[in-house]
Amino acid sequence: MKIPAVILAIASLPQLHSQTPAPIPVKVVIVAMFEPGEDTGDAPGELQYWVERDHLDHIYPLPAAYHAARMNDSGELAIVTGQGTAHAASTIMALGLDPRFDLTHAYWIIAGIAGATPEHASLGSAVWVNWIVDGDLGYEIDARELPPDWQTGFLPLHKKTPYEQPVDPLDGQLFQTNPTLTLWAYNLTKSVPLDDSPKLAEIRSHFDGAKANHPPEVLLGDEISSSTFWHGKLLDTWATDWVHYFTKGQGTFVTTAMEDTGTLQSLHYLALAGKADFNRVLVLRTVSNYDQPPRGLTASQSLTAQRISKYAAYLPSLEAAYRVAHTVAANLEQNWPSTRNQIPSAK
Image 1: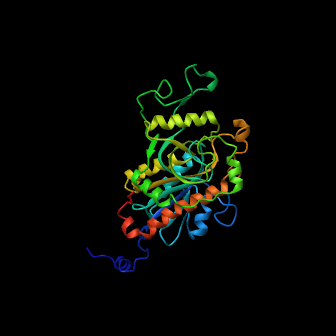
Image 2: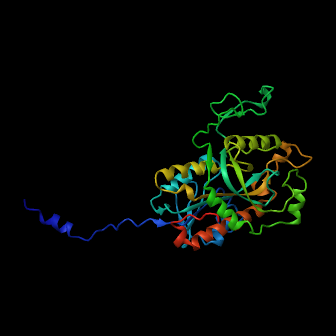
Image 3: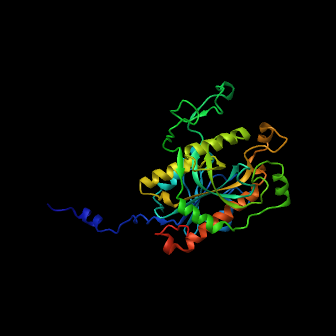
């Protein structure tokens, strides 16, 4: 069969469409949770120091996510999840599935501010987190209707009493970061100086707890993550027991968070799909406020002052999150010929 000349002519024309660009290799992803205004030039949130200091000048719109991704020429990318586990899960999944980025060797550093128990951390401190326990999945009855032998109205799903054995976490209820990587990050940063001031010391002096009046320091600890912002000494006791229960006594409650189980759930699924490496995930939370009132105030009175920009250690905790996490990010980037294929571990 003779092929028409017009078809032959079209076939001989140069290709009009260029090939799809190769995915951009990402070395480190910084996961921030909120930015109250613009990414630069105004009152900072968790993203702004990274954008301004690390020159994250390349903007990649992500219509399926809460916020655009920002990146520099060194392989560092940052994203803002939005507050709460739902925002976090959807944003991280959108980023992880975006074909513009190669995240297969990327390290993920969640770096944000948090509440903390004054028993185990002080204002302005930075906590590398190993165990992350979800505080939302469960049953609840009003405390005014508790049986006399119950200490809490929160029950694990499928259990009949609080802390009933055996422990049986649901998918997404319990996460653990790579312990050797977390310990490596802690050892690398434990001597990083953190900001303190007479004003911060005076604020700390009004709280009770073993660590309440310590100067800021880099610590190891564990976290409860829930979209409910809770506050008070009684709920601090619940969080302590909840983390102890789900980690089978291995975890110690130190910090609170509102997003991390959502972020980690998506990273877990992305890892199963070969899009991420869950062994390369780090969680850093810095203490902007205590999870309970100072002496002389009720929980409700104290809660009225718990607004993001009004936290007692808001700016010091933002600085600590950047300073400590950046030390790790810079090390990973500078040593990329080895850290690309070999995850650092504590010596």
